[in-house]
Image (cartoon, rainbow, N blue to C red; front, top):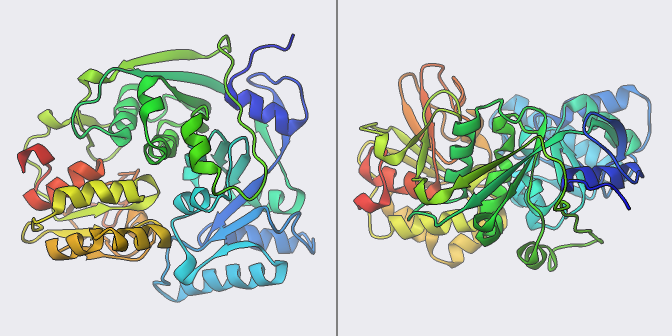
Amino acid sequence: MSQPMTIAEKILADHAGLDHVEPGQLIEVDVDIALGNDITAPIAIEIFKKTGVKEVFDRTKIALVADHFTPNKDIKSAEQVRLLREFSEEQAIVHFYEGGEVGVEHCLLPEKGIVLPGDVVIGADSHTCTYGALGAFATGVGSTDLAAAMITGKTWFKVPESIKFVYSGQLQPWVSGKDLILYTIGDIGVDGALYMAMEFTGPVIENMSMAERMTMSNMAIEAGGKAGLINPDEKTKQYVEPRAKRPYKFFESDSDAAYKKVIEYDCTNIEPQIAFPHLPENTIGMSEVGIVELDQVVIGSCTNGRIEDLAVAAQILQGKKVAEGLRLIILPATPQVWADALEKGYLKIFSEAGAIIGPPTCGPCLGGHMGVLAKGEKALSTTNRNFVGRMGHPESEVYLTSPAIAAASAVLGRIGSPSEL
């Protein structure tokens, strides 16, 4: 009889060719997908070339996505993308995306069926943990580790301990996965799950759309988590089945698996959340916010740029106008999301409300371009980080929230709720 394991332990054991692993154990695992973007991959490519190795381990298992500074914002970013393009051509990399094909990587890869349940995915981007929503072990690594994986197809891990989060109760109006993950980070802190696998469970998670699950897994890193996993179910299957181009495997935690701790939340009492500057753990319920006037609102990113997020924003913005003096920037996360938003009439609603509609890009999230803040400006954003200077000037302020609160606030000119409209 094999010893009970968590989903994280099962996936890692499977990829290490072992029957059983336990927390703290050092293992070498096979990688299903190795990911880099236009900021991190150029460094990995340089390291790759210095080794003298001629070919990547598998041209179908590497994804290079030019999503951070594209459309190229300056000469340096243009050079970075050129490096990716040339390497992809030279190595015949199957999953290279730029120009009109590019989307925000962590929305694009699940949408295209490139990452799948049961995978081990490493990405030179901290929000690679998003794919845990599919039931994959996915985590961010440095560019050196990415280079090593591109050569060998392997990486090493210390098996993480797991924390189980159980969400039950009835959600209040306008409360979404974004609110639950902000609430969770506010509860445990930005290092509350340091190098641990966060496992999101309970009836509330089971009822969630795949989009909301991805939002929750996306922000596991904001609590210090190594990964943010959800046991795959029928909803996962419905999402993955039409997209998958290769076999995949569902793993789930044993009922008697060992956890570092189990944390339970009754969601009935959780209201929409706002993370105040300058940490994702500085969360406050909507009723406690007070008056916070805004200069900019951003709806998009790998956290909340999917069609479900834009649907909520469109519902709230329909027939309304963006507050005078406020910039509302909306960035559909992938070309498919953009096309769907066009077809459903959302882009017309956004345009008529006075929003700026941009291409799929990470741009403003990291203060890169397409929405950089000036000194003293305040932005409310559906992105995942609000560190000092994250979206521009070190003396600007970033507040984090859900698409519903973001859309309502764009109309109100201050942080507020759709119920006020």
